[in-house]
Length: 176
Image (tube, rainbow, N blue to C red; front, side, top):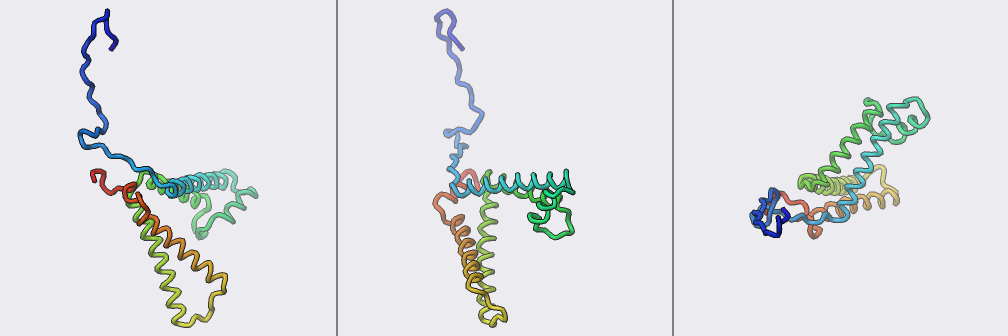
């Protein structure tokens, strides 16, 4: 409030409605690690592309572009129409991006579990296959891509579990 006629007036301190450090309800946000931000943007991109594909297949189903999209990008079984597959994919990618961006600790733990379990399952199957004497052994290229897949899954699991600041960026409880 501006002073009137040179007279200073007392304005009481307005109460703050948001979180305040002094009250103890302020939670400092840790910057989201770069790879997580890139992953969120990848999910947003995939959601947008899936939505565009759904619109292409839904609005012009008999065109060459729609046939190309449904033939080359629809990985689900044919019991479901390609348009529905793309809508479901767009929704799931968007939901996952939102959960990662909102720093949901459950999203972090699910991906850690899935990547670690996938690597363990692949290695377990590889060891069992070797012990049983596989009738169709892997070629050198197949074996190399197999071990690259295992290493990528282990790297994702390790990154989410041990990268500095990851636990702080995905706090399970805001009052810690």
